[in-house]
Image (cartoon, rainbow, N blue to C red; front, side):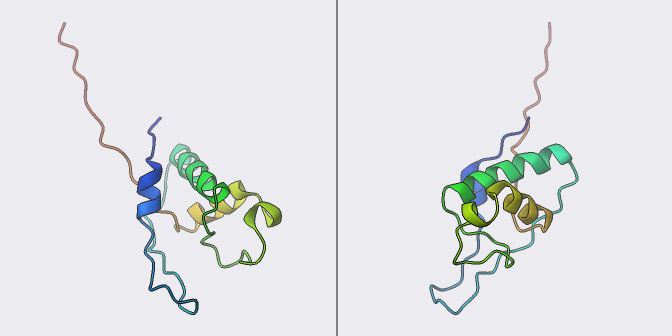
Length: 99
């Protein structure tokens, strides 16, 4: 199972200047075609949300904590489905057995 780096997901967020009026712009991610990759990305994003990351969906109210309004896992799944979460696969190493 490919393991995504949590730091890679956090570092891909594009923030605008620190003004309260300016919205945060998130670039569109590549669509996920594998359901297994979808689960991995959503699980890592849910972990970020549980640790205090702001939800990227505009439907969730800023005043209500994510854990109180909707489960973090559901919010993460919706964000991944809307291509709001950047993801990257690690490089695969080919191992050749020459016995």
